Length: 189
Image (cartoon, rainbow, N blue to C red; front, side):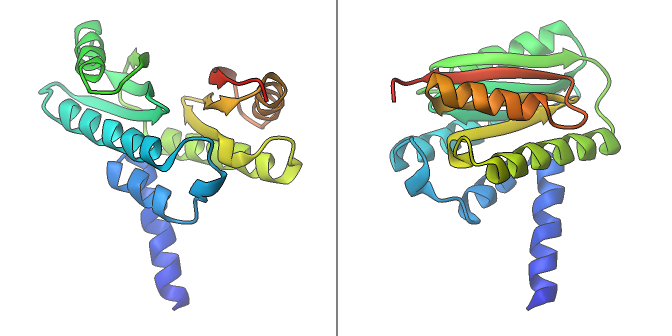
């Protein structure tokens, strides 16, 4: 049994490193408490659908691309590396065409594809931010989606001003983070 748990954990981490949508789905199925999420189950499903459709659309692009797409309440973040500005714009336009996308933040960079060690470091930073959200217990970690690309931490979620500030402070004060970008929807709660 322990061997199977270790294999599942290693598979999950490897899939996260390579931006596979199966990891996104699996991540949603492994221990995420949807009752604690401020999104409805229907919106959570729609966000997953947006991510899968974006993944499919990007797969049809012939140029070399390393990208990941994240959707939170219909707001989409695209991160990764592309060969040129034309490909970056093409990906953004394809994502904007997807039903129920409210906004797109395109943080793709025109650069060489990130190395496996760079991706692993980003995964570690994300894990550290999430762990600190749990440990410090100032904002529910179920209300914040944490994404790291090239040591830049992107925070998505539906938060009030105080929670947003707490989440930002936690991320900014996490080792190896160079910048924090807040992509929150704000509520009066």
